[in-house]
Image (cartoon, rainbow over all chains, first blue to last red; front, side):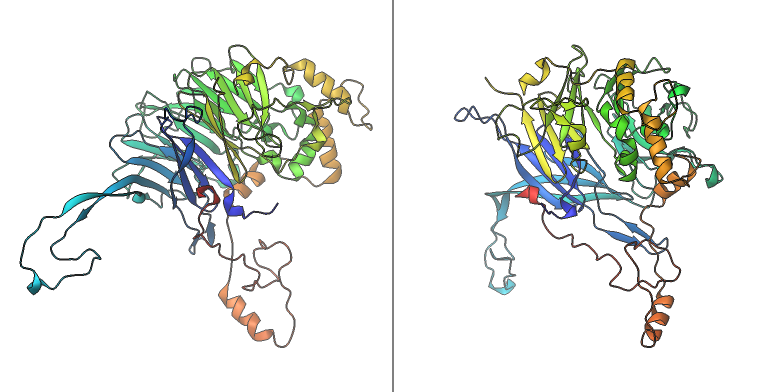
Length: 425
Length: 127
């Protein structure tokens, strides 16, 4: 089934209340969904998400000076907490971060003196009375306007943005540097991390993701392509090249192979809502780390370990470089991440149970309960199982989101968005 | 979806046990080693067999440099105009499947460059 590349969803994010869900795509567009108010008339339609607003956030660009093509693909969207009637979000492509304001208009002024209802100017000599315009209701219109454009601060490709808990600043991270911005100031940013070596031949690792601590405005973490996480404290120095904590799991040298470093590269790092833990995603696992223990993770979950025997072909088709994200549920008790074949996985940290589910229209009807899936690795395949060789590696679930307080999840399967909710009894 | 967390079966075992059984299952037939081969090593052997010149530093400089240079495209208008002038006389090589070739023998023509995408189409998610 052919669809344009521009439809591929590249990021999904709920806002802080879960009322809004934003998606960004490869074509530079943002679509925002809003949850319906629950009505007594239709109790079974428990707050479905409908399209609220859509706009073109970024356009393709060409940097002539560097001969660089700049994709319009939205890499990340992050919401600001709501402070008035309008909603604000940050969206970024490889080079430029933008602050968008999304606001509603449901009234318009009518009865101007100098123009008529069509907007045409009236002849001033014909005006004999003064009248005051009044606000009258109109059909709801949702407008998105770019309020700030934060450009020209990144030589390399932006992989993360994160809003600080002070709500006044945010950071943007590229492969080698992290910058700190103030929302009000677009022509300057502070560089807080710079891992670019003096001689590029000595380059051994890049920054893969970064995030601010949810409560401590001075603390942030960033992950690397070598599977390490650094926690930095902005109070210690202006340039946080020296970390406060360094998280790395010791590698068993007997397990080392050509693929070791590539599969250890961390594709996503997320603080728990409590701020006590961080979760990291590498190619085959999800790990939970306690901020107080740097020498190894406290929990490791296998996402799709059966791929270990497929690494050669996954390297050849570039799938080994796929960047999967991971998310916490509202209470930090369950973690979720995507896999191939439109599968996604959930791990309950308390019961240690896990499940594989599928986001696909062919294999489940709307409102039906999702059936757990199983991948078979051995020779004997049971009826409902799928063998490793039948997995479709072009159907990857890289981006998922979990509602901040309820069991509602959003799953992006290439060009389709799925929203799943807990079953209502 | 409330069923999701009470699923009885654990989908995959974790730890060394699993690794051991996987290894036994997929050990390459031509390995001489007597002890169990870990799956990655078997995969590595396959890769090296296909690409004997594969770099000594996996995940090292070359791979990272390629990542940093994503999006680099070159076009020289001087070359292009010279080539256009000469094209009446002889056929110049055009780009093959790899449009990312920097310079060299081929002269990119407008047909070779990827078309600028139209960004004014509304996302299908917006209905």
